[in-house]
Image (cartoon, rainbow, N blue to C red; front, side, top):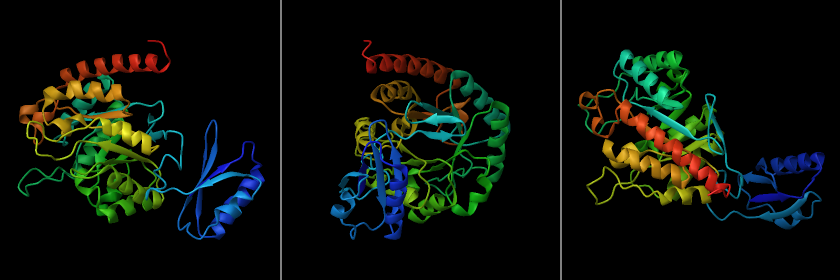
Length: 341
């Protein structure tokens, strides 16, 4: 349920309304927009009578939200959310580029790549310390040592860190991490989602599962938000289909749909979507053009020798060229939005 307030609503009356909702076991979330102020109701609202609420002086209209996701719903929060990721914004007017290797392999490697991607314009550094791998014999990451190396790269460059949390038992080691990634395989690990929702306010980069529907993705975001953490960023990385030419099938129309349904920022991962470095450039440009709030691109200084995902990793030189194109496209998109083209 969402409650639309009248323009110029008295602050004292609004607070009384919130207290009324809390007394009925419903948590109110106020969203102040340029045209409308909305109170979203999280909890069991079946017992709330819209007619009684609409009789209050401050209430313009009460609407029931039909979709099962509430907090992630754009009806609940009409304005785009802008998430602060260690000093850089993703969403709203903020466009984030998360770049770095699939996995941290050494301190020298991660520091060198961090410097290269920052020079090219990246705003956040990615790197896996804990790696979910299909084979138990494949490289599983360096664990806490990898996190320490990411922290060194952060000190050297100032780039905020994005890395994956697989098991909440490792959460205490993530103190220096700025954005916690929940990977595609864990998108519906509901216990993990509830834990990161309840125990941290750090931004959560939630990657879409490899066979998930958009509603399932939004419901997973809802788990995090309903548990107390509203700082969620959605990440589209393609889904598994019958096609074998690409690692996954990426439908960029998903960006438009998600931004229509939800106020949460949407980031696109062209590396995992395509599985081939030569495709990353054009898909990144297309994602920026269609309105994505950011990109997550794998970059490795020596892809043939990478311990994982070398085939889809750009070299620093390739990444710099891609960033140049992205900047040009975003300038054009900005002019188009302003009616200048």
